[in-house]
Length: 355
Image 1 (cartoon, rainbow, N blue to C red):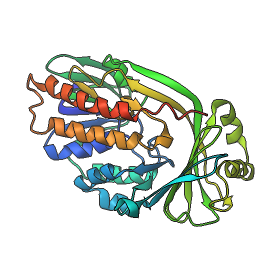
Image 2 (cartoon, helix red, strand yellow):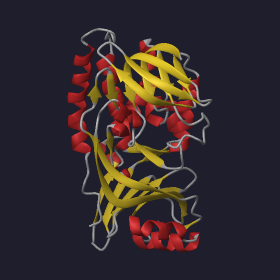
Image 3 (tube, rainbow, N blue to C red):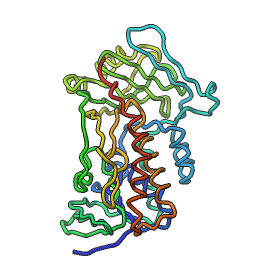
């Protein structure tokens, strides 16, 4: 079995793992990203047709990484947010001008964002990408972490490192391998996502509507279209997904109303189970969790990706000017955990259930 030595090995090459590798690359570290899915723009599950609302803090991070120009060129700014409650009069409204900012956030299709990130990674020789491959075992001690990686042909390779980062999602296999448990609570709901064409211009408004079945978000995207995240119960999800386009749009319209006129031309739909997850701790010996491996939130809260980018920012700060091989390394990881737990606990949103 061949062995290779790195400073940092990142498990997961989705949006979070790739972003972390790009953020850490300027530190001059030897970095490897292990990803199970073949490197194609349309293959990585996190690079799909879902939309992500990027916060201003995420914008600043991508600016520091030199990526914001390409991202904002493919994004749609949110200049106001409209929040309403089905069956009740009135609504809440937040406006960028009133806040004194250019935009409250930006909406980007995950597939497009993934293309920008993968393109940047291809141009970053400091990062090695081991793909398609998966970590099948982990050994940790006080001086080194070793990941056993199974390649596509079935052969094994050992990657040893000073720090192993689990960025492989809410059902993280690496999290279990390093001995960290997670509490998971099912919402009993699925998020039905897609995009559609509204009759009236969206005009850079993001809508959040609370219904009897759960929250519904409608976000502005390019070419006059709107993306939606429609929360339905587990029992209803299969029926809703089986509807033809006309019937589907009629039900969605009934939940949202006619403030954007009639909906038409719905695109490809997908449904995802909703689970609130929280790792019981964020670090182990020579290892750390970031992103959904540490915390999984309801998508309508719009904070999952932004929270993960704050994980990356804090981990970057914790590793800056640090000797990764030094005995003091656990102290830096403990400091990371203390700083991140407060933010993560604040973002847990159990109220996103049917009312």
